[in-house]
Length: 284
Length: 214
Image (cartoon, rainbow over all chains, first blue to last red; front, side, top):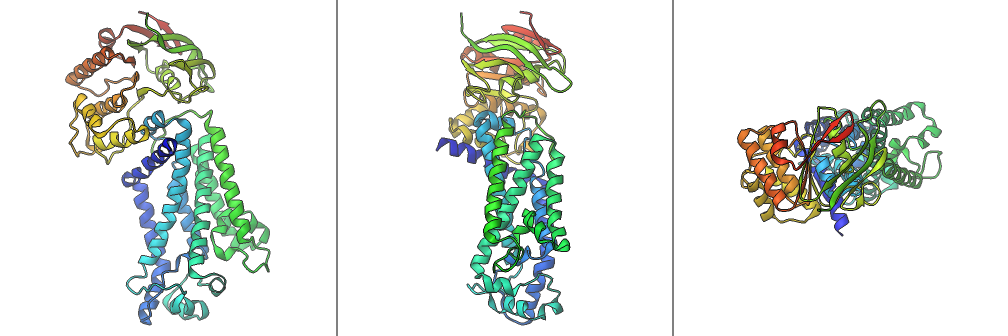
């Protein structure tokens, strides 16, 4: 129990630094401004037809490749200071021990990734206010946008997929989207942590950003093989095969490979950290 | 004769183009203040980091309280440190910062945190953020975080940095009091006056080599 408290305390110390970190405020502002471009047209459409929208927009965000690019580059910005060794950390490490501190940083990446996507999900709901209704159905607004071209008059750029509505209930789509985005966010965070710790701090962000752009090229290349090698693209339910009729990766494939990759990165972090010097790095 | 609380044998640390520690062997007796002097870059901070387990040795061994760093333990268990400039969460008070650090080991309560702040001359009730602290106040807070959990070994790298004359005198008295309480203190300082006044033994480091001079 004492060990768990130590690990959790190390994570919480990092989260408490957010309130004094300008990078977090810039990131939040960027998300609000750019997500507004995607979500507010739905709110305007809902207001114009006097029908409240249901709060299930989040699963559609990653269906748009540019929005997915923005969401995942946000993760790169969030974790670009990995392995998080600032001038405060030696005083944490001397109290927790190196191993518990390391586990604390891994838990921090998982927690921060979860908070990041929960924040985006919350924004996507808040932007629909005040024309919002809670229902376990997709609702008339999302249903109409999926089946008609009514959205074009209101510049609705998000691809509201009818296929997704047929395949998943709103709650299931929200849950799967949050899980997939969280797994991808954790993967990118752990990847940066391991690369920055083992090599140089710039490398992690470069490799993670390259993976984020790889999903962008998947859309253009349209190569099914490439979809299987692009973990970032699996954050979108639209890039996964649900009908077992295409060569796209399945939901099971995406979830199991992401869990496998994350476990492998955690193992590498533990191995590399044993011989790592604790050098205080300047803030990003 | 008091036992050696800290034993360093043939400790060597090599980087690609430098050898900041070169076969350093020395033992430090419990309950005394030990000074280490040397120019910038002579290897004092690297030695301190190796003692704390922050830098694995290339060869040799360091043991604290009979336990070898890097083998039996990853960091010494009963230790307080100041290494380089103490870092804090800028938008928390001094008390808030110590409270957060204390939650890791959970060895002390709020009263002990407040008493430690008073002991280094800081107001425990002050709501002032650390970002508004002067360099001297930060240094006092650094000393407070090092001593607050009553460790038996203190590693202090330039603890007088940023302190005015009054502050230096306060910290000297505090260190002598801690020695009376039985603590072992390892201190690096550029001030020959501090070293002469406080230290029972003095070593000099030069280019990674340690020599006992008193």
